[in-house]
Amino acid sequence: MTAEEYENLPQQIKNIVDSWDDNKDLYAECNRIQKELEQKGWTCDYGLDGMVYDVKQLSLQQINKQKQNKTK
Image 1 (cartoon, rainbow, N blue to C red):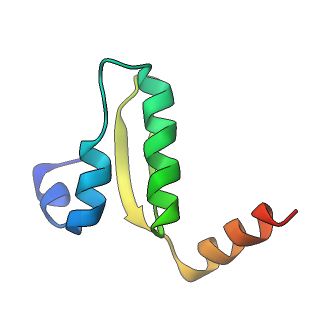
Image 2: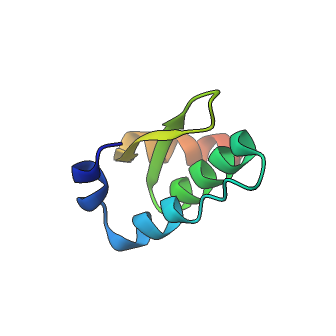
Image 3: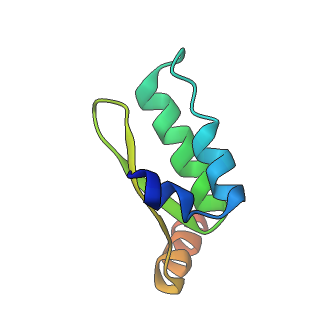
């Protein structure tokens, strides 16, 4: 994520991204951050290198799909 992309994120989302702890299992941290973002209607991708990228707001369709998957 570029500095400009980061700066354009809402503060609440920045706080989640900033909670990343490089002293823990990086892949598990990325998974945790992704789940926290999804609770706020956002998501991200991450690589096997343990780096978060492509932080974006979920579309209404994606949110509805997640809700359906949770009720199964």
